[in-house]
Image: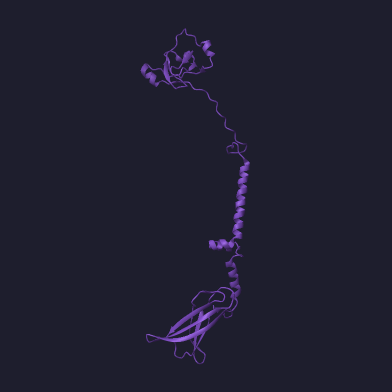
Length: 268
């Protein structure tokens, strides 16, 4: 039997027995229009041979629905007769043997190799720059000095050179590295308080920048006995090559029996 959609005129071959005994609601698979198709007469032929050979006819099967005594409610509640075209589904590509990952379509292994080559080249360039430009990196980013020191890669940095020079000069006595000169003691009366003031200079005898040690003032009597002494710092913490640094210190109410003053470097 041939059914024709009243909306788009699509035609379908169905078994007339599917419409018995009271007809069914059917739906066009092309335009989704639904209509009620009455049951065929008993003497109607099942399939017209001329229509069956037409290429526009597609096979379909009505969708049965549970019968209901109320015809109006039956139209609303019965299952629709849907005509669906069978589509061939793509079979998924099987997984490679021994793998639990999906197979990659059109996968190019060359791209991954070039990615690894690029990563390796970046690491080599980074390490080379880190070693070659130690001085620049240390100046721009001072915390990097700790990293160079921990890796024992600080041999070429100025800080390393200065530290090695300081270690070499550490064993040399201070009076061979520095010279105390132009020492001038004086007494000042300030609010009826006599204050002893001592001034002078310190010269750097080396070609390195060094840290200045503490200075010691000693007051002695006529017999050369030390009756008063104290230590103090000069006006600067470091002294460079050929530089002179001043120092000054004072003592209120100095001892009356002090006859001489000596300025030396305090021993560690």
